[in-house]
Image 1 (tube, chains in turn red, green):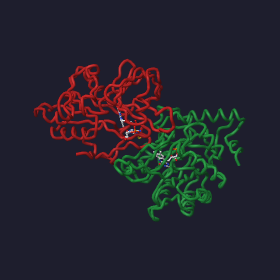
Image 2 (cartoon, chains in turn brown, red):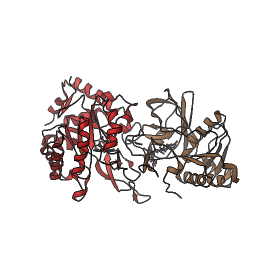
Image 3 (spheres, rainbow over the protein chains, first blue to last red):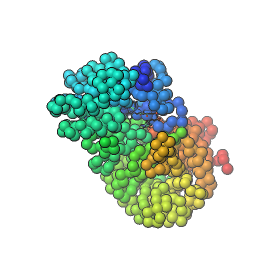
Image 4 (cartoon, each protein chain N blue to C red):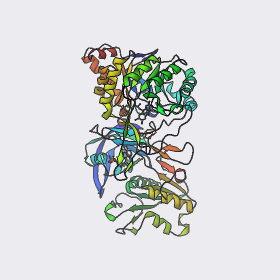
Length: 256
Length: 300
Ligand SMILES: Cc1cc2nc3c(=O)[nH]c(=O)nc-3n(C[C@H](O)[C@H](O)[C@H](O)COP(=O)(O)OP(=O)(O)OC[C@H]3O[C@@H](n4cnc5c(N)ncnc54)[C@H](O)[C@@H]3O)c2cc1C
Ligand SMILES: Cc1cc2nc3c(=O)[nH]c(=O)nc-3n(C[C@H](O)[C@H](O)[C@H](O)COP(=O)(O)O)c2cc1C
Ligand code: FES
């Protein structure tokens, strides 16, 4: 983990409201799939908190994030151009654990797309053939996957405007009974989607890992601000330090 | 140029400290900044027992600041000694344990357990409800503050800093009570009571309703409190609240603070404390100041 100024190499819209930023990673420790960075809300004292973003790609000292323009910080990020500089702390947090001999099933949606793409490519580069299922509301939100994926991905849209119709959970539930046996599920996206993966994994008696979100203060384990309720130990865990990746059975789910 | 600041028997190498709850137990920032350049480290609150902390979410950003409701989450004094002290004792800066409790006895017990470990001192966090006496925060009653300070004073010879809450009618009364109870210094200020409501859900964002406001938006509040307290007591004052750069820290020193602490700034940019120290040194150089106490000469 280091703090460094990173040169923005490219910053382009990739789908409606989503951007991909590529930036230089001038430090020895590469970010691994599941890890995130925090970016300073530069240029104003009106925003005091850094913003966390999962790493969406890394190679040859260039890293990427895929982010959704939501509020003031991401609007500012969206306005940056090649040649600008961002203040980064990273890599932060833990990683998606290696699936070993099990078949990796990767499930992504919304702002969870980036880390799932990175993990999918990382696995593909190591000779694995993950089943990757990506969920979107409609086709306008689907980025150019062929340009980004060294694996085949199943696209699901809620309105059926591209790929399979329905949610990623609908798709996974409809797979033949033994299709998921011997798999490990990795999910990142809206809480409802991850809770759905957790429930499915429970039904099929397979492991499931989820990458959680919480508003962060420090991003490095010092403030205890990013706590989420868990079922073991002290009742809470820090997303920035014990996470962001947790075994889904340790998370206290609020969605059904 | 002499950058040291004396608090009781403890000498801080420089006047730039990091505030309780924003710097963990130091090790979290080890790989990010040069901890040798920190003047004093104030730990996260330490209580007798482990405390899981408040419901989530615990943080919400506000304009020019943030609201938090962490709830004194900490590992408890025994694990603090076993797991956190070994690292803290390797640091060259002064280390103060921020002590909290829900009764006078709990504060005393934490201090008694810590005392053999010879920390630089204690910072008594008054922003805790006194469960035995109607759950009113210790820091809001001068009589309680004097009693609590005197009770802890009687148990330790280590420097005692009392941390004041701004959520009172007259903070100078509380500061005087701390001095009367035997405090070696006061810290001014803890967070300001605040609230944020999500108009879409029609609920407060923090589950407990209110939280503590910190960050650049509270600088004028902390500064005025420091200015008034520094004139009400004869002991050193740590100025805290909203410092994001050297200018903010210098304002506190000019207002009468003997040293400063940075809180929220550590979140925005962990390198801030180093830059603040550089800025203070440059300012002293440019203005011909020999020692930190010289800042106090300018404003009546
Ligand atoms: C571990 C982690 C990884 C993330 N990865 C991505 C990613 O790859 N792509 C992406 O688009 N988004 C990601 N996010 C979410 C992203 O951090 C928020 O969308 C961003 O902070 C919004 O900032 P804003 O100022 O634009 O919007 P705001 O209007 O300030 O906030 C919009 C929402 O973002 C969340 N948020 C605000 N401040 C913070 C903060 N300091 N820390 C965490 N969340 C906050 C809150 O839920 C808030 O309601 C991640 C969050 C976490 C915790
Ligand atoms: C997340 C967070 C946790 C805090 N925890 C404590 C604490 O445990 N004890 C304490 O005395 N003050 C605590 N504080 C208050 C700070 O030490 C400081 O007084 C306050 O934040 C004002 O300074 P700032 O504006 O520079 O942040 C906390 C503040 C924040 C933001
Ligand atoms: S954000 Fe501070 S502990 Fe996680």
